[in-house]
Image (cartoon, rainbow, N blue to C red; front, side):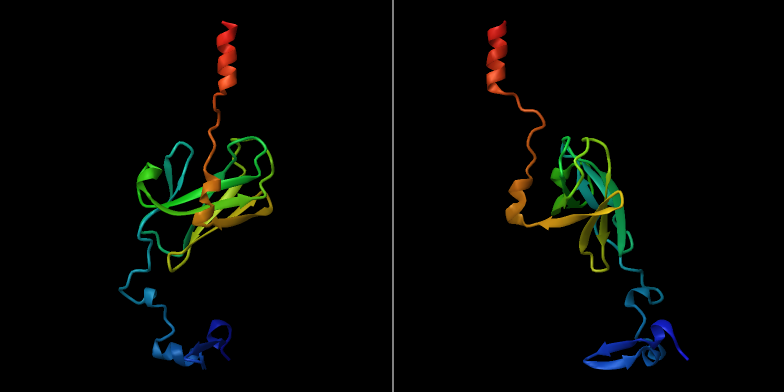
Length: 175
C-alpha cells in the first residue's frame, strides 16, 4: 500500500491522476530539481531602509528560493504603536540608490520605549520571487499590511526634533 504524498491525487487538465503513474513517468519531479539544473534563486538582494537613508541587506542575491530572513525592529518614538518598513531590491548601502519594492506597516506594537528592539519581522520570498512580511512581538502575532502607493504619503517620517520658531525668539529675548 502506498501512503503519504504518493497516495495523493493530482489535477491535470481537470482530470484527477494518481501520483504513482506520474512518478513512474518522471512528471511529478520539480523542474528546478532535475539533475544538472540549479534550483531557483533570488535575482537581486532584499534590503530594508534604516533611519538616515542607509540600507541593510537581509537576503543575498543568489539565495535559493523560497527563503526568509528575520530582523528585529523598534519604534522611533516612545509609545508608538506602529512601525513602517521600507523594503528595497538591489545591492548597496544607500536606500536612495536601490529599487523600491514596497512599504509595510506593522500595527499593534505595544507602546514601549523607543530604540529597544522588540518586534521580530520576517521577510519571506516564495518560489516565484514574491515577497510577504509577518511580524511578532513576544508571543503575539502583529498585523503586517502592505501599503498601497496612494497611501505612502502617510508614512513619510516627521523630523525627530524640529526647532520651534517661538522658542528661538524666546531664546533671543533672554539674551
